[in-house]
Length: 177
Image 1 (cartoon, rainbow, N blue to C red):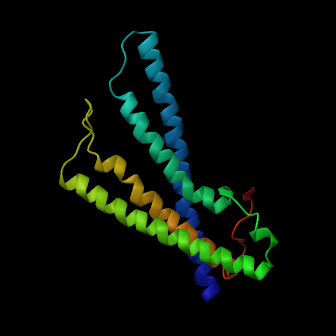
Image 2 (image 1 turned 135 degrees about the vertical axis):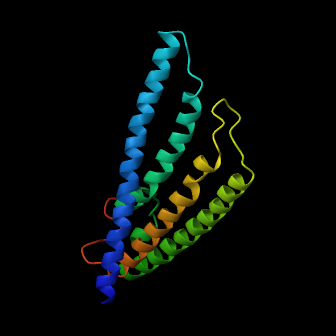
Image 3 (image 1 turned 30 degrees about the vertical axis):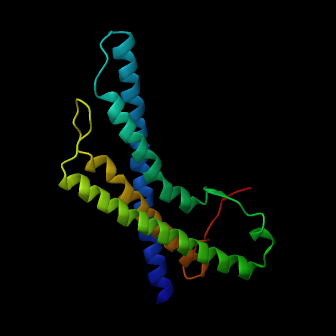
């Protein structure tokens, strides 16, 4: 029962992380188009836009942060394992669970703080200092969303280390240093 529930939750977190990674990829493609459009209008038409810089700045933040949970899922974050690779498997696993839960706690705290920041920006009706006048709660929303998903990925990874998740190892392709 516990293994079935853990596996189902792990798959749900995977689906959400993968969806956000796909969204980040689409946003990156849109970012490419936006920047190319700006280059064309600025240097060919001699009529630069007033919106591409702000949109691309906000978009790059969303791309990097929304992809982070999926990158963690793949085990592709940098990992300094000089000491941990020398530990017995059980100790390495226990340390992994502890650090994953610590990471989840930090990310949950960052998500909670980010949600307060979004709420404050929305309450104050803060906007960007540009012609777009973008409500700042929109670009700030990436903080609680991305860190919340990252916290879920850390928890899913910790549960996977316990062996409750069928068909998944906690990290598969970590970049070892």
